[in-house]
Image (cartoon, rainbow, N blue to C red):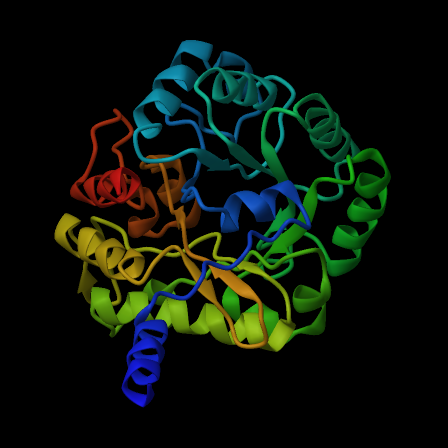
Length: 319
């Protein structure tokens, strides 16, 4: 009998732990933590230079469709950065046709009532079509495009107009989360964690481990879910003596995804690592920032030609 009990105990100990239940507080959380692996990508249309407002109207719907069709073999969710009435509704309409499962909408300028109201209207229109989230602002507090109060004011206007099913956050670089506002605002955290800027001396594998570790620390500190909105490595360009290439970009994503897209955090929370940054090379970003590497974060060229890193995400989608 003692031997039998020992065998049973050993079998129980060796059995895999039961999967955690999906986080059902919001459809977006259920999508990120559900049984079917989720994968999102930060998306700005490949043929759009948003610095000129008229370009949103000139952007062809066929171009949006070609973009989203190219991404779809590896991704079923999109992370957007801003709202324009001539472009964003078309992006969601095409994404619905292509059976994307989630969209995280962005408000680029929290001081724009038109942007806030447009995002709210799209959420109401597509509540049944996608798991939805809204990120109010992107690095604007850090780069002084707006203040924390502007994000709060925008959220106060947004919340009553949103379906209650929509989760809300803001996004800043990692170090900004040392401040209470960035940690306390919203239903989840959406940090940009960039070893290229903060730990440039690290190899791709070490950089990936560092980014995951910092996200885990943040989730524990804030006691909230964390969606790592941006991380990665460019495939070209030179910064502070480091020359980047496609092999480095691929190696980063292989190491970053290997432990899994969803990780538990101390205290019972979770961190989602399944967001790729970013869809397409955007040459206008380098012209705007004067940083060579900013043109080369894409998993695709601006002509929709994939780099080796896309194969990593595509293989992950097949598992």
